[in-house]
Amino acid sequence: MRTRQRGSHLGLLLLASQLFQVGLDNVPPVTLAVLGLNVYLYLFPIAPLMQACVSVQQAYGYKDWRRLLLSPVHHVDDWHLYFNMASFLWKGIRLESRLGGAWFLYLLSVFSVLTGLVYLVLEAGLTELTQDQSYSMSCAVGFSGVLFALKVLNNHYHPGGVTYVMGLPVSNRYASWAELVLIHITSPGTSFVGHLSGILVGLLYTAGPLKDIMKQCAGLVTSNGYHSRPGAYFNSSGFSGYSGTHGQYPGYHQQAPHYTANPTAAYTGGLTEEEQIQAAIRNSLNDRGQSNQRGAPPPYGFHFSEEARAEDVRQRRLRRFDN
Image (cartoon, rainbow, N blue to C red):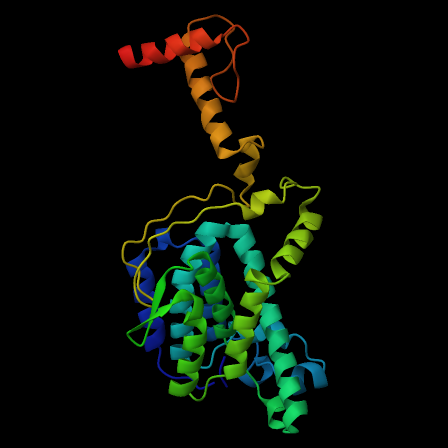
């Protein structure tokens, strides 16, 4: 979050270069769409910067609450956009692959609004404590508050890893705090409170009640839809073993999550992964044993012949290896 000057488009060119180095096919759809939205709104902003940034005076005093939606997706200049989106790119790849596209989009929406609200609360508290009205007039803009929340979430999923901050290895548990202090020291124009708000929102999700609240809300919305099982949103596995410095992508390998908010999850029939594998093995054996029989069940779906016995299954397995 920062307070806009338009410069050259070198930052945009570097961002495009980085995107093509990673490969568009390797960027999950929600991450790519959010990145594209930020670039589009930088080139064609909905409102001038001073009408998009969020502050206590403007949002609470003048009831201009739309700023909570506008401020995260507007940026001061192309370098501000580049550093935020380059950071978002690798966080999005990791987290969207782990959580699924629908939940990741939901997460970004909640984090964007909640980071702004926490920022307003902190700035209002500082105004009351110090009796300094400059805090209430401080106007912040940019995606970096959301990025700090995502950083906390990513570090939560990889607690034993190490992040290099200015070349120094820092445990993932403390990486967000180290970067908060470092950015404030090296870039005085950035919003310390805005970044701190992101960290607090991330902690509300990983160590507080926010995740459970979001699950409850998602369950209410989807209770009559295809995803009536809330667990389908939350049990997922991402890829591991990622190593590299900020904004780099060496050795990227993506694994499909076990459960995502994708409509294809309806085809699992409510089975666990192990049950699906066992059913698939039975299916394959039935298919081989009945493929020449008239009226045999279709080869797709989880069907198991009532006539098959344990010994029959064992013999079929042996014949598979004899062929």
